[in-house]
Image (cartoon, rainbow, N blue to C red; front, top):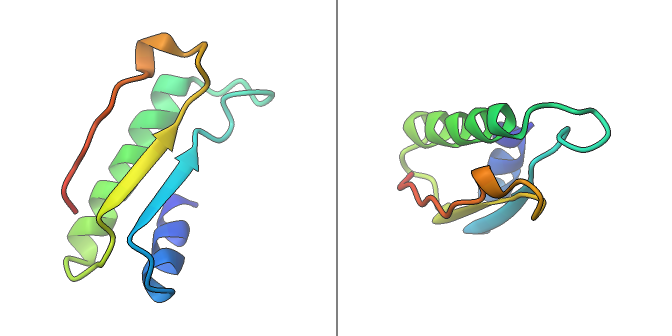
Length: 76
């Protein structure tokens, strides 16, 4: 899902996006697993499409997930 969002972002000429940590609420997925998976998807997209215009991807987590709330910037 993350890669599809990034592809759509690129196709429409946008350079940033904020993505919620989907599945960590009512579906009870581990927020740490979801965050790692999402970060990996962004890194893989950047490697696959080095010409991307995307400059910033923000991951939105619920305030109760204090262990995982850190600002991480990667270059894609």
